Every structure is written in structure tokens, then in C-alpha cells.
Amino acid sequence: MDYIIRELEAKDDKKIEAVIRACLIEYGANHDGTAWADPHLGEFSTIYTDPKNKYWVIETTDGRIVGGSGIGEIAGSGDICELQKMYCLPEIRGTGAAHKLITIALDYAKQFYKKCYLETFSNMIPAHKFYKKHGFVLTDERLGDTGHFACDVLFIKDLTDQQ
Image 1 (cartoon, rainbow, N blue to C red):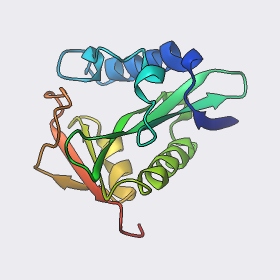
Image 2: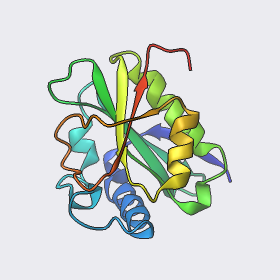
Image 3: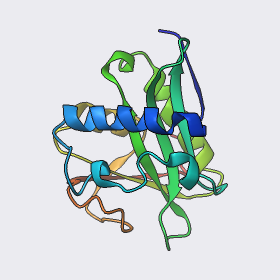
Image 4: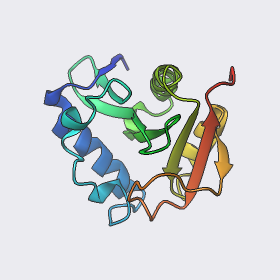
């Protein structure tokens, strides 16, 4: 599958919302305490405007959005960001696109932050393996007020490492 990874544009807001909702349904996470209930889910172009926060999408050559991920500051942390809303449709999984996407996001994050945090679910086993492969380690420390109280698996990555 041919695709490009690019920064989110306003025209992508509803498309990436649909991708995220489809993935949340797939994993039974379409309820409160998850991204499902985020009030700005379909408005990323209005919230990823600060230079320290950015969102990227995976777009196929026929113009479909099939994945995305963002970097956002954890309020009050100063040097810790969160890998936000990283979701890919099944059709793009296993193609290397997610690897390229997370590499872009983490390389960008290194400009501003020392650590990267993320929250996910215990039933997203392939995602756990993926995050560990990219240098994330499990943590028990919940950071920030993400509103994702249903997320039961937490990861952190030291961005100063060369991993």
C-alpha cells in the first residue's frame, strides 16, 4: 500500500476521528474514560496549534486517512509529553507505516521533551509489543489529567536515549 505521512490539516479532522472511533470499537473501548469521550476528538486542527504539539496522519495515495498520531504536552510537566491518539486501521497495520509514524512523532518530541508517556488498554497486546519495540517501558505512574481513566496500561519512554 502506498501512503504518505504528513501533518494534519483541518480537512482531516472528521476523517481521523472516524479512524479513531473505528479502532476504539474494534477493541471495545467505545465508552467514557477513553478517547471516545474526548470533547475535541473531531477538532484536532484547532488543538494541535502550539509548536510543542503536533499531529500527523497517514494518507493513502487515493486520499483516505488510515492512521494518525500526535505529540502533546502534559500540562504542568514541562519536559514530559504524551504520545496521543495513535491509531491505525487494520489495512495499514504490518506495513511499516506505524513504525514510520511513531519515529516521526518521537523525533519531533525530542526537540522539546525529555520523556514521552502514553496510556492504552490491556487488550491491545499488539500495541504493547509495538511500544516496547520503540523503547517504551511499563510504568505505574499516571501522569497528567488526560481524562482516560479507563486506560489500564501506562508506558513511558526516555527521549534522551538513543533507542
